Length: 522
Ligand code: NAD
View 1: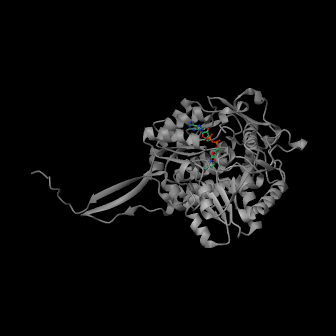
View 2: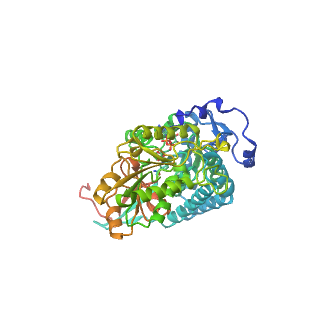
View 3: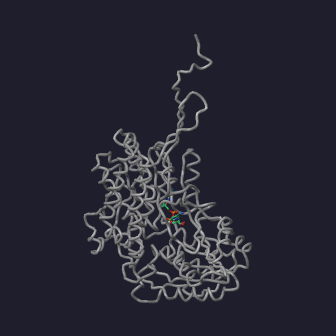
């Protein structure tokens, strides 16, 4: 869903009043109408964003986004900061110290950050608490990586010392989506700073608040350590104006993007024109596979968590379930019963499994996919509409929905819905499964549920997916590379590859023997 298509986001009709009272608990944090341009807080000169709580539609904040001149100022300030000797020549251990301090400050503000993210995205507090912890862990992990990452002495082929070294790129443009803002922001900011770059962050239109608060924590820490404040900018605004200005700016040496495949293609095209490195973490339509020999209770719990956690708004959502024919009816029945038992409600309420979607515009888009599936002959086994409870009427809720009876070519089986919608399909054997599971343009993740480890190993190597879970789903380690294949993206985040993605490589040949080259004159 492109936020630009949501009129409520940009127009005063969304409510031009004051932010609601509960949000004042965040005062002292930049819910004020300010953005971070080259280390300086100021009012944005671009379009106003009306940021809402999707649990009840109330206004959280109205902030002006950046304009192209502010993007230009941010990139120039970033360029100066990245070249500043205080930062450029810093020992990795000192850079690691900065990152560890940022991690501490995130942890100190964990409760506030989680509540703010729940208010802005609708996710449950359990989920946003985990995202905040993961953001802190990401900074700490990249502190360790930069302190231990080595350059190489390469084998000698002459009287030279030959080396391959890694250095910062300069200014990195980081563009993030709305579904897990603090974790996506940290996954770009931490390795990019660890590698010695400056960062210009463009958060998503619907969810700029937590990125601005993170920006405050990070930039305060940078300043306290005596480093140039221009190392970080946080520039909310539309993708079409602010995002494009960041990607196209000649001073931006790399873009790291997480978001939809369509946007990724556009950014990739600009990168090709600029001959600029780019990382693209894009969409998915990930299969989860249940074989007849699987431990069914465990598999069903994993399938439900894989699709319905985060209300299905997860790039790795297991949105296509393949069940071996022998146990199809049994598994479908258990999945439907499980989906119906999930508690839908505000992310702040205890015991809630499924919060609202990020906005009512996005909820309507999800509902449109379900209607299309119905029209294509799909059977809606559960859900298929918003909850009827009166107290949820003002929020962007949609019930966990399970659909079967669709052909694999149907829109709901091919396109990323990014909501709480699961399609269920039967398969006969491994060959049939591989053909069906690989039968979309995507290749982000997959889950395999089986008791046969040889089959799991065989299948894991045949599925087109950057991450495969076996008898589990949606579990992550910051030290394990993550990224997509095919239309799900290019490059890897996390792990040592996550640091290398923000460095450029240089080779040195160093004559230590005083050798005279053959063309020496005289
Ligand atoms: P989106 O592509 O609409 O927007 C993502 C970001 O890109 C936003 O900040 C947006 O403003 C910006 N943007 C839009 N057009 C731009 C342009 N022309 N130039 C530069 N920036 C531009 O995606 P979304 O709807 O915010 O997020 C949902 C998508 O993100 C889903 O497809 C989901 O699968 C994907 N996602 C992928 C991962 C992953 O790691 N693979 C993780 C989370 C989300």
